[in-house]
Length: 335
Image: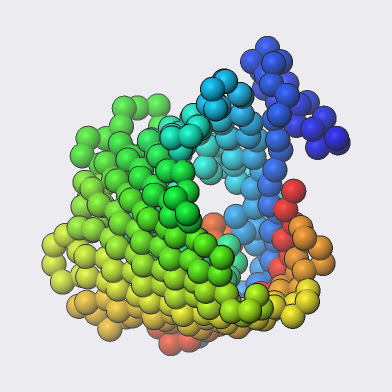
């Protein structure tokens, strides 16, 4: 009841007449802060800091249009709990659309289907050890100016497609840039303990970044409800030159009551250079409740960009080589 009153009050502050007939506006979010010690021996960087990692607040709702059809909307934005917020409203997935027996169609800003395949498998997602330290770039992005479709589930199989007219445009009061479009497709299967995902991205917008196309394959399997195994493979083909990139990840998580022990290893191979990124991570979560978790992790890597994949407010440049180590203690709360 309290959440509903807060949601309606917040909605009314934006445009009372438009929301007057809407009774199901929800406020939701995730607050995530961590204390991090980063030591990059090659770059002679040693730093202790506090970071807000992909913390967000959002508003969403729907209207029953009859006949099984509903109008849906969402506005979500990043909040930096440690240093104040400099983000634009709707900086994260924000859209308007329709939902029915045919599936879901939406227009706005949204993660690409390829990106979502990886988000389902990252045991350290949105932390300083996020898998995008190694398996990022290419079609793994939040697309601007997007039109997307999500099919109904066919016994666990879901298809998704998205087309972005200008994936790089962001908040500019100008027309979309010509020849910067990107499209992305995915097929995922989630049934019981098994998850399988295949993603693809292509288009002029990727070619502008010297990427011909991006494939992603992922899998997850839960054994006896306690042990979860995950794996992911990315293949990024360069548009010109000898710059192809492929990377893989394996990981496992074991749940013992409120404690989750987890670890993964990631390795990338970029043609034409020996500066190949790699990272291994171990960590433990302790679930204080269904919505509040504290955790600790330690990661060690080479040629990785710490914090960028997590959307962290404290980020570090790509390691020049040698060892870069990360020790992080954090807390998350969802609402």
